[in-house]
Amino acid sequence: MTPEGRALLLEGAAELGLKLAPEQVEQFGHLLALLTQASAQMNLTALRGERDILLKHFVDSLTCLRGGWLDGGQRVLDLGTGAGFPALPLAIVQPRLQIVPLDATRKKVEFVERTAQALGLENVHPLTGRAESLGRDPQQRERYDRVVTRAVAALPVLAELALPFLRVGGLLVAQKGPLTPEELEAGTRAAAEVGGQVRVAEPFTLPLAGDARTLVVIEKTASTPERYPRREGVPNRKPLFWQAT
Ligand SMILES: C[S@@+](CC[C@H](N)C(=O)[O-])C[C@H]1O[C@@H](n2cnc3c(N)ncnc32)[C@H](O)[C@@H]1O
Image (cartoon, rainbow, N blue to C red):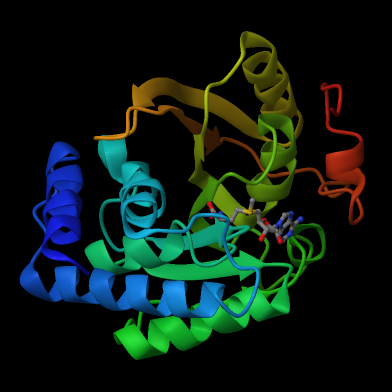
């Protein structure tokens, strides 16, 4: 990482109230190098360049910590982690979290696994598979305190895919771009259908970059009915209470 990149990362984190230790900055530098190297060989992430990766992957992932919903020693699933976001930045900054990054694409999960090992992150336990199937697996269903997710699907789809993984009382923390009232309305109805209630939908801007974001928190208030999630592909194709685009 260049000295400018280091300053940018520290400033972005500071805007979120986080003071990164030197070892954590080292880990982010290592992550940047591994991501850049792997992206040259496979289609891992659309973002290229130090500034974009630092702000739009690393700092952006850390915005999931707003509100303190992920404080403490929680068991967390990162639904649709891709190249490890937000899982890897969260694991670096909150070592007490036990994080399971989940993705349907094996080569992405393999990258996350290799990278977590290289960074010495023992709190990362990657998993390959589709949320629709794993959400029905007794070893995964209702086993998590938190589900985090970033840039994966519309809110009603996320509600159906994520809520089955949560214990009653657990929270879905979804980091999204700008949210329309229609998406929030559909997400609220979908959440109710699968056993959840929207607690917070808070707009904010990404530190330094200024992009519009929304942090949505849905609490699981009742057990998810057995019929959810529906079979693979259906939640996206026919989202609950929402017109697929
Ligand atoms: C646009 S990427 C976002 C990746 C990462 N969360 C990020 O913010 O950079 C969406 C990822 O979600 C995964 N995904 C989408 N639907 C999924 C499902 N039903 N089960 C598991 N993974 C899924 C895709 O394979 C893809 O890697």
